[in-house]
Image (tube, rainbow, N blue to C red):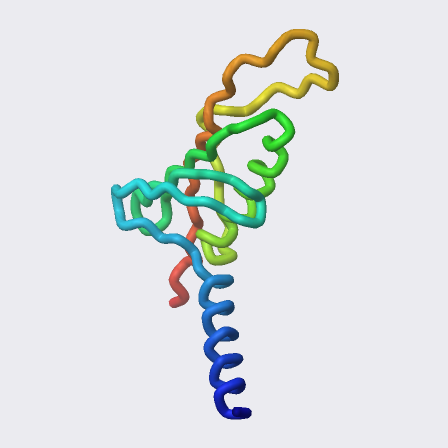
Length: 123
């Protein structure tokens, strides 16, 4: 009985580690539709090459924009494996109105190009 529980615990721990460390990496040119459970963000990812990505974060409401922005920074760092990166926002930055007086129009997705810097080769 003790051996079965130990095996079950080991398998559960390994699966949890694999899921927690998983970074979705699309093949070059393919767009993947993904979801981040921590920030509750739907997004599309296209791998342009080994160091460049196109990310499109789906907008759902004004309050959620903060989560989308935090997700973007964390996810860019993860995709670039801790190396410096550059984000170029191409569309979707929402305006900030504390008390909107009229209904908001549809907000486009937050669209960015992510460029990961690589460490220079040591001679």
